[in-house]
Amino acid sequence: MDRLVLDDRTSHLTIPLHADRIGQYLVLDLGWNGDKYLHATPIHLSAIGDKVWVQYDDTEESVVTDLMEAGIPRENIVLGFRHPKLGQHTGFAVA
Image (tube, helix red, strand yellow):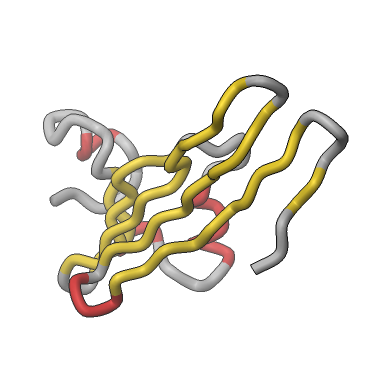
């Protein structure tokens, strides 16, 4: 794992975490942004059945785009962070 140093005041690690046995996948940002401590989980995915659940996505370019570019069809992606009543209107799979 390489340390990313952006300048004299900003450095952080982006760490992919996975628990394959239980189907949980996260990205952890950890370090410093100037004088402010950074500890964030911008991405959380779950593998549930034959679907990929996007539990949280705080990225500039949606992780959903990356999933579809990797060959996962829309009907196998659930936007878990959307209320179930809205799921049918997203164009993606529903729970």
